[in-house]
Image 1: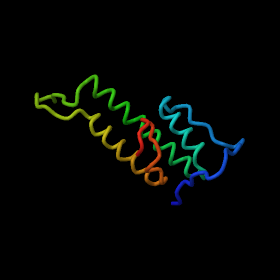
Image 2: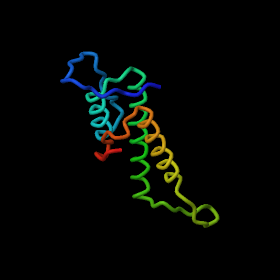
Image 3: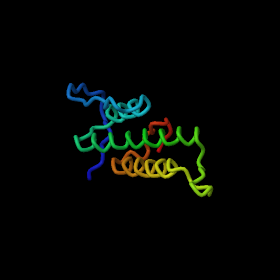
Length: 116
């Protein structure tokens, strides 16, 4: 897959620039828009970017659940087991990182504001 290409010239007014998907969180939308504005993306890149933003939201949702419920639960036998959201958070983080690498955005700021 070809990587997203940074713009090397002034702002481009493109009336066809895609809009951030409505179902994304505010943080994911801000990040999504910043990438769309900074890089020339092909339609398939936009789909990959959207999947990365969705993975970020899934990771953050799992993190909120874990903050409220803890990372360890007791099963029906009373044994301590990892909360299912631990795996969801981990898988979403790995997916997001892979999609960011696929787009060639490793050095771009992520949804959390840090460079990746």
